[in-house]
Picture 1 (cartoon, rainbow, N blue to C red):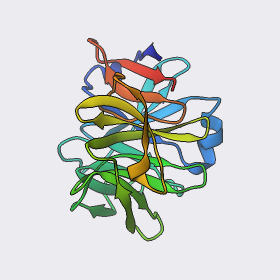
Picture 2 (picture 1 turned 90 degrees about the vertical axis):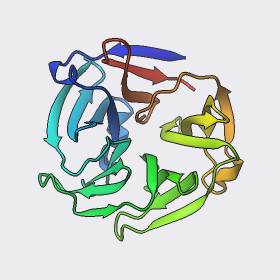
Picture 3 (picture 1 turned 45 degrees about the vertical axis):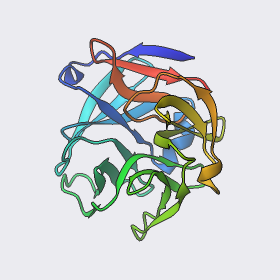
Length: 219
């Protein structure tokens, strides 16, 4: 089931796509009752989105975003990790990246309730990785099932799900973080957005003819 929400912000009228930033660990509990989302535009403009009153406002403009951004994440210390081809890390208010990794392509990210940061790897092979924000080390956990690509994650009722495709068909997948190859499809044929999702199943990819629609999915 999906619920469409109309975003009423003039700043977003120029936007073709906007992606979420998952809140810092300290604000995850608040998000469960106050759905405030964060997004990054393809040119590096960050937004804060209030789902309750459907408004959005710009908060920063990041440099070094090449070819758009597929996702962004607020790390526990407040730094921002952006997936733009590879990975770019920022410490605001400095708009320039303080660290980058460009040899691997990632499409989605999420902070688990226990603090683990998961990344969905696309290139060189599609699978699940874990990122250490202290050392910037990245551990590849394992491949997805054959033919599967996960574009983005979200937690709902304490369970980790992913939006993606399996052999060309849109799917919602329950993620097995111990053995990603055992992740299971829970819904097939679902409408999937190209952008980020956040806790509770909101997607902050703008959709619709006016480019200002946010959807909320209920697994």
